[in-house]
Image (cartoon, rainbow, N blue to C red; front, top):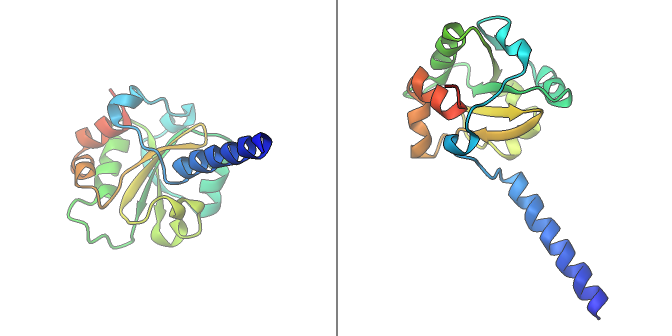
Length: 154
């Protein structure tokens, strides 16, 4: 009986931990401190659209990067693509973009439910994302300084 209880508790803990990973336990910018991107991110200053396959490849090779998830015609009040383009140019870094069509082909749809958004990856692992329904995240969409704060660029 004790053996089955131990197995049941172990399985329950694994399920809870797995669920926490799947729903995206988010870190605040202050918990992240300074974010380190992969070196190739700093080779150019550009906002570059990528395909779902390219996105999955970046995860597979464990890159650290920022990807903006957006609609081709964005009805959002603060278009994050414009802010991301300015950040890319001002900081000579590459920020990647996934259109809604390409985004829908990825597993990221299991975590990010609404666009526009942005997702931050460290060594191929999702660190955080902007939630389009979270009023607290809206401040990060509005300006280059807000997006830098969210990312952890000092």
